[in-house]
Image 1 (spheres, one colour):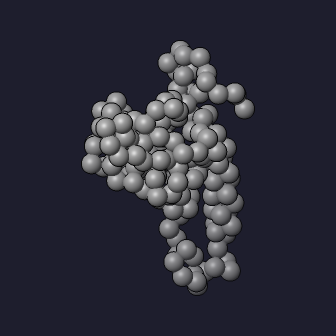
Image 2 (cartoon, one colour):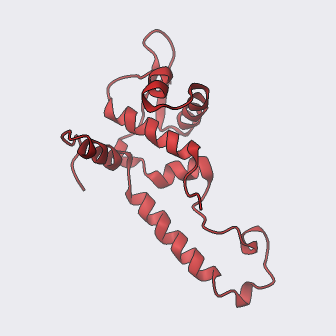
Length: 147
């Protein structure tokens, strides 16, 4: 089962890199090279992030992109929903139309309950917390206050 698509994964990696350089506009080329993301693919993701207001984009010699919001305020759930839609574990018929088995479906309510739990957990994970985790993995001091 695939929970995160390449769109979401790459967008999260770009946002973490931007959070690590809060006062700098970074070029899409630099992000693509350092994160090993296909450049044209990344450009489309950055456009979507800019449309959503998560990042600022500036053209010109000193242009690039940078975060437009506090990394603590950007949740993984928000990024997932931007690129994939709501967190859903099932594509069963009750999602597409009124299922004839709806009243007898013993799994439906459990799936909805689990989706709610997963969504709430992804809401707790922020770009700032992921950056802190990255710093710990790399043996660097944390930049943000631990939650």
